[in-house]
Figure 1 (cartoon, rainbow, N blue to C red):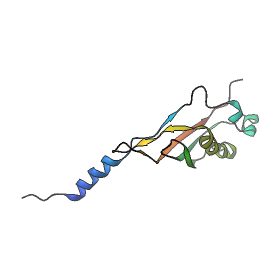
Figure 2: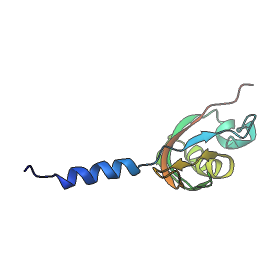
Figure 3: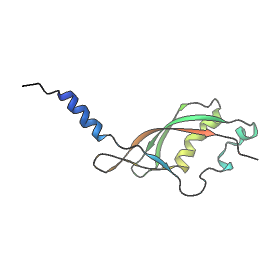
Figure 4: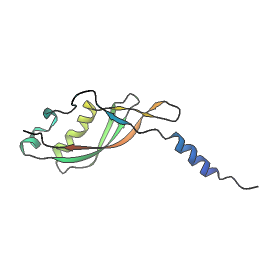
Length: 116
């Protein structure tokens, strides 16, 4: 009789329990306004891309946020996590049993100067 590779079987079980990714959902209309742009960065004409790791709760709310890649602008970086916590809502991740679960997600915020 052949040997069963239990480690491989456990890996397959673990993969089956991985949840579907949380996805951003807009609450209707535009979720970002000119008022969300950091005033100093706006005055100085700065834009940039900030990468964050967020925790999305089973209710779809951002409960934790950490900047993982700076835009090079401290005020854009500092404004990103509060924006995600205050404004963003997500469809929560779903596990293999259909339950909503907490999930860490990497997202990017592209701060682009408003059109004037």
